[in-house]
Each structure stands twice: as C-alpha cells, then as structure tokens.
Image (cartoon, rainbow, N blue to C red; front, side, top):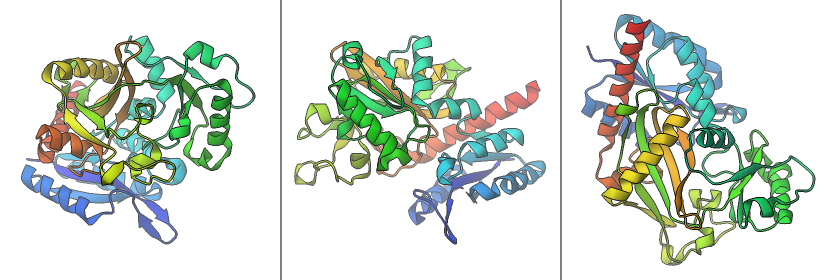
Amino acid sequence: MKPVVWALVPYWIDGTTVTSDCYDLASYKIELAAVFQELELPWIMQVVVIGNIQSVMEQIAECAKARPTLVFNLCDGYEETGTPGISVVKAMEAARLAFSGADIRFYETSSSKLAMKKLFRKANVPTAVWEELPGEGPIHGLVERLGAPMFIKPSESSSSQGIGLKSVVRSDEEAVARRDELLKGESSLLCTDEILFAEDFIDGPEFTILLGGYWDDPDNIWTLPPTERVFDSSIPESERFLSYDRYWGFYEEETAPAEGRPFYRYEVTPAEQGQVLFDIAKRAYISVFGCSYGRVDIRFNKKRNEYQVLEVNANCGLSASLDISCGNILKASGQRFPELVGRILEQALERSVSHSKSV
C-alpha cells in the first residue's frame, strides 16, 4: 500500500488570521497537488502554527495506525517570530513518525553558521578563516588577523537577513560600526542569537549544490547538477554576493542591474568542475550530519586558489518556482520537480522502515 503523505506547511498568526510568506500562494498548492498526482500518492496539506503542533502530530499518528504514513515537512521557520520550525521536528521524532527533511541534530547545527564552520574545520572541509566578534567594545587587530576586506555576518539568519553592502568592511572601526548597527539598530531583529562573526571576504564565483541522502550512509548521497550563480556583469566584483535587498529584489540600499536584468542567473557547471564541487559539498553535508536533503553554498577564493564552503542549508525551499534556488537549479539542469520530491520521499520512507526493523 502506498503511503499517505502529510505535507506540513508553516504559518503564523497575524492578528485574527493565519498567514505564510511562501506557502499561502495558490500556485504552490496547485504545484504540490500536481506533484502528488504524478507520484500517485494520496496527500493532505496541513497548516501548522505554533499552537497546533501537538494536535497535528496526534492526527498523523492516528493515520499511521491505519496505513503507511509519511510526513513531507516544510516547517523551517524562526519560532522567535512565531513561525514553526524546530518544534515540529522535535514533535515528529517524539511521535516516531517517518518524515523527510532535517532531524533535530541537522536542523540545530545548520541554524548556526558558527557551529557549522567549527564542524567544517574539524572535518577538514575548506571554509574561510573567521573570528567571533565580542558583543560590545572596541576590536583590535581583526584586519591584521583576517585580512581585508572582511565580511560581517550574523551566526543565525535566513534568506540573507542581516547581509548588505555594509557587511563588507576594511578596518577594525568599520567592523565595530557594522556590528553595532546589527545588534542595536533596526537590523537587530534579524540576529536571533545576537552572535556575529567576521570572515575573510571570498572574492570569486559562487556555486550552489542541492543534494540529498543521509550523513551516515555516504554511498547513497546524491546531487542535482552543481550550478554557478553567475552575477550580472554590471555588478562590481566586491558586491557580488546575496544581500538581503538583492535576495528579495528590494534594491533600497543598492542599485538594480542595468536594463532590468536579473542580479544573477544559474548555469550548470562543466562535468569535471561539478564533480569537484559535489565532492566538497558532500564532505560538508556529512560533517554537519546532513539528513534527507540540503543545499550547500560554495565560493572560489581567488586569493587562496581554493573552493570554500559558506554554509549548508537544511530544509532549503523546495519548489519549481524560479523565485528560489531550487527552481532555478531544476531549470538549469533540466530536472523535474516531481522526480526530486519522489526521490526525497522514497529515501525517507526506506530509512524509516530500516530503522523500525533495527529497533
């Protein structure tokens, strides 16, 4: 019997209504319906808010008593802002449900860029040199230790929050100014754990690799063709990175590319380069206990002649929409969204069955 799939989508309560920044779109509901129709899987789209997590788990558990059941978990929100995320994962694990997406360890680890960088270092995964910043007071010798320019980042953020042109600094004084702006200004809401760090600014091309599988089963980790984010030629090289404004197309602080061109486009890398990128991405994914699927961002450091991992994104957005990386990777590589979802769900179900037999 084929499993029934519960697609959990994160919403938050806004006054007297529930809303979602991505999954409230009719187009996404239609897209999911088409995916599960092609996969010939019965499915339920379930809205999840902070207050109904337990009742949703109880419903799914009852369903699982009657027939094979699998959760397609899309909840990846910041709970400080009222959007469900890690609590859903904890509840699924406590209920012993079969689910796709990050488990508790992968979710928590990938939520902190500093935690990931420490694990990269431990596993000899190449990444930019960095230093955690003190929360207040002067900073001495940062440029001397890391070099200039440097990049100031929040340890915890998503969708390039807290990243802008002023994130690139060239002196200790500029680093202090950017730190204070992020921790004390309007941007402070974007820094959920109030931990910032400086790292060497990687001046070189950027790549993104969507891969799947489980860290403790490395032979079955797979990837979509690695792609390069090719930045528009009108953008200065020192500004070719994903800032918050550019990620969302606001262009309040920055200038949009000429003639209405996109800030960047995606191109599949040549096969030999793609294999190198996948090998590095796989090592990074394993080092942070990758689970189910994730997206690894890598840049080539021209100064050091080395590919360096920026981060691993757990529960990255899944859609064929060209508004997100996944959709662009699928389009550039000629892959289809239903096949991607089917692969993720099949692997999650196989792992659940394997684990249940070993208990």
